[in-house]
Length: 344
Length: 272
Image 1 (cartoon, rainbow over the protein chains, first blue to last red):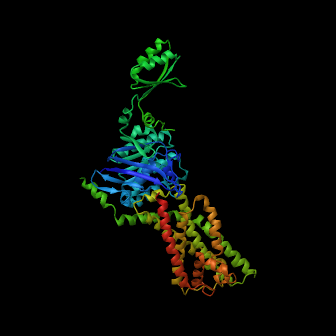
Image 2: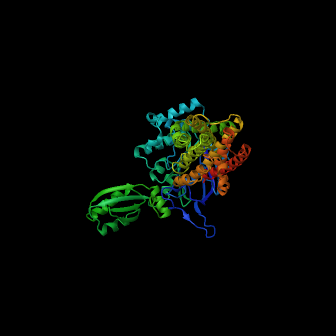
Image 3: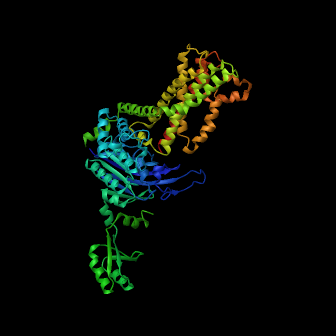
């Protein structure tokens, strides 16, 4: 079976400082602080009406900068942050449904969570972490030992299975966190910034694990501020900023929604102003920008422009030395919607 | 309509699973406590045992303190050990788990009401406090030697009081663990626990404070007073002590307040 998620108009106003996990690395980046004059209480609007529908079996991405409200959304969906208003439910193929906040105990049986910061039980060994997690979910002893062994093997942790996890590297901790989340075979997997701080190799491994889970019919909700990750993994992406969804669709749809999504980074032997003028007049070019490294062209196509560019350069007796073409990206999209770069 | 999905979505939530979850949480705490037993013993029992040696042996043998003082010490040392163990066993890991390492998350995500997680923590604390009381009694008894005037006539009352003391320490530990920040631990220990131990009537009976009438009233706010007096009154009744029934009533009331407070603090700490 597949289990989907639906939220309606979720709002969250923190009246005390939000938990570390929901703050992101740079707390305050996206929050608006409003101090009430009379009560002197903190009023931090973290979510401002988020309505989402995640289909069973979908990989859904929440993309946004630190402090956009991604972790708060995950917190609400995983019973860890109480919404100020709105509702959140788990849906089984549109039939059975569980209100996450009315019936937390049942909801928790269907979800697996990988938090942004590793939160492994430091008092236990890697194997014990998995086995106890299975026990918390009522899995019989033989079965939970079998599953633990299998996951340790799959996540390449068998050699360290009986060590306490305090000395594990970040990548190992993250792998174990994912293994733990999968221990009770949840229908919905939440991954909050799963690849933050991982080396490229571990990240690729994580991605293949996520794809594998999804192939087994699991619904996956992933938060990230990494374009590549969202693009690579997600069926659909919601771009969030200041606690609101500002764009929603498949990565391809989203990228197609902005004009002149291609960026061509060029380097010429010389760039006389005549060349810039000629480039600006080429069909499909929306902007030409001189940068420290060379010349950037924003256009609605990529490779198809190269012939024209070479022609313009030759006419001004300049040589084209280097070309780099970026396809339309979610990064560009975020810039387009907010006027800010995601990394800012 | 997907029948299997719906039935699965309703079927799994049963008291059966909740009980399994609860016992698994408890098993986890027992496993960790067993693993840390040596450090726990050193942390909470070494000091009381040294005190036993200094006051029970050095001072009495040299004649600076009457030998009858020895019997006074044992119940007091048990009260201190149980209280400290319960508070430390529950509060210390919780402070770290909630604030820095967030380790508690995997248990908060277990399919059980979060209040039960708090209850489980207290149960594990009670168990550890009781074990600590039993463990410290043996070397203390050996260190003190003969002539303790201990009584086994009131064992029923003794165990009732021992349980209430253990519950007080565990619920107090949970309240503390959910209220104090990591940076304030040191302050709490020197400002709260140290005076609590010194004015806990563990090393002297409450009656001995008669010459300090104000202090004698003030220390009544200290739960350790009832713990020491109660254990003394049932284990070594020849020494002055409060009536055990009064002790049971007061400790029962303290426990009730602390359990309710601890549950509320835990709930607000667990969900933001």
